Length: 445
Image 1: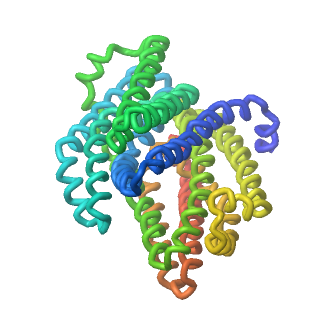
Image 2: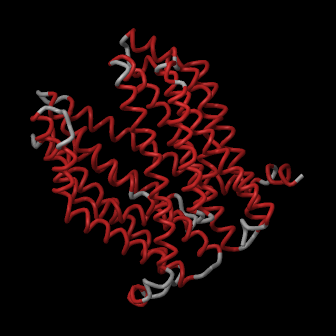
């Protein structure tokens, strides 16, 4: 009965879409940025420029992505403080998050050259590609303070139920990056150095806009003075650190599975790895879309838990699950009916197209199977239950490798079976944990 009442409530749908749609739109600019980067660098006179940028940017992306727990933990803790109307705690979460972000950035800058030397020593790339990869990495490293601060800014703004500011943060940063890419690389002829510098400036531009948005919110809500909060930074810091630790370990497991998917696919041959790359781009499309609704879930669930409002929590869950289901059904139909045409948009190599088409059924099944893990992640982030997320991810990662091992005879199909099972297992384990805690009354405390 409550499900029907919630679904007939326009305010619930409005709340979900106002939070989710801006995040989906901002996520769309991320692959667009990568496409423009590749197009600008890819039109230079030698392939090693593109290879160097790809190598250097991958190292930076993986490093920063592993520190993405700063956004997730900040969103959950901020949303709970916002729901509880605890202004002191709301300001404290921001100062603790920024202190941690700048601390990690300082450590990274201190050791980034040693990290680069160590990682590049494992690469089989040519000397030219390594040279330009190291050049790109050494410049991009200086964006660390802004890049990590942006995680905290995005999380804090989203936690205060403001999705438009994070959307404009991401869009402004990416548009700046694209414009400076063209100016520095094509206009000034700075090549790889220009691409790296464009990204650094873009990160600081996004951070500046984010700080301005936080400043406005700070004064609107009359939050405590920052200096007083800095003195109180250690208060409750252990909870923040434990939550970040658990989410970091979860992210490490997630990165391990996707990295294995790429490297193992490469062992099956050039055409297989190319076909996997095409299908993985569609999987990223699913992820970017579902992340928008997961972010909405984080903010809404955290606010409801902070306010200790079970009715608000139920409405958040029902409304977000409904719209996620609608989106995933649409994606499933699109992949099933127009999969061949979508593959053709990315590659016109007949052999790669044919191979990608043979693995397309795995992708058709992916939206409806994977939506549960994205949304349940959002619930547990909002509830700041990092230990449960960590344990679920560890179990699912083990299942991924076990399933691949026993299905190895299927070749690349075994990889896709393992990936689909991995997504399903994440949803199943988190769902079981949620059901148990809900029945025991442990979830909303």
